[in-house]
Image (cartoon, rainbow, N blue to C red; front, side):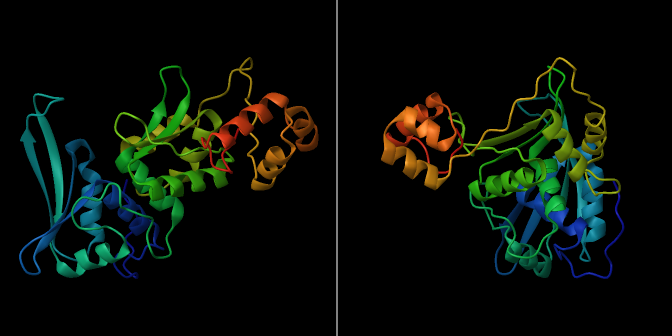
Length: 277
């Protein structure tokens, strides 16, 4: 989806929604490569179906860049057509690198930008590049994102929690060490509506998917699970000091089972003092 050109702003001023989105996308799907001397390049390769977003990046960049296409075979398809945006200008690469896109391998080391940023546009860029928006097989709306970076995962979790109230515990999956952060039903709806607002720069197909999410209505017979109450450091201290689940439950206003499980996890080093139970 097109956006108004931020001609009055410095290149990659992350307070500008278009640049905040672009930087999030670049952190997730871009690659900075060094060359001999001051040479090098920034590239983003995606499916040709999303080439429109690369054209937008080209339009937003006041330096020469190119968009090319290529056809190749992959493990997933006999024929795959991709589009690549390439930017070589040293000044542009230096600016993007300063903001927090490192040269070389980056998936575990990227962090939120070290500059004021339009947060929801930045998060939308991350999700467009490394996330999904849609309807589950069970018919529930969802927004999800995967990342290898703990700092990025924490940022997305914090943003979504402030918006929806939904808490998520960051935990890498055992197969590939990636964080999978998922929001469904009303939480997914709220997040999608906030991120994919009218006129926002985004992948057209995900903007359309966000519109589909807004039409979901919870069935009358589907109960709403209550929000879990997080344990505080002070509650942990009281729980360990009393060492009696019945008494602790009365003092803390929790169930005996909750106190039993929490105390066991604390004593076995299986939880931090602010993990929800």
